[in-house]
Length: 68
Image (cartoon, rainbow, N blue to C red):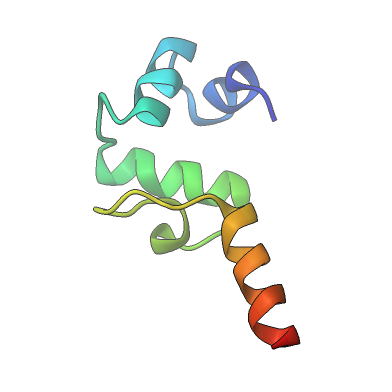
């Protein structure tokens, strides 16, 4: 999904989506719930007080751990 599509679906401007992605802005609780609804995910799966690591690194670690 593009930034423009997300912005349209949650009724904010595209620049605001970019600011959220960069961590320059924090969403209101209402906006956080609207974004989560778009992706059908719980808030804690989308937003965190700690930076998310790369999903590829997590998958790689799981594969290597499983083959040891």
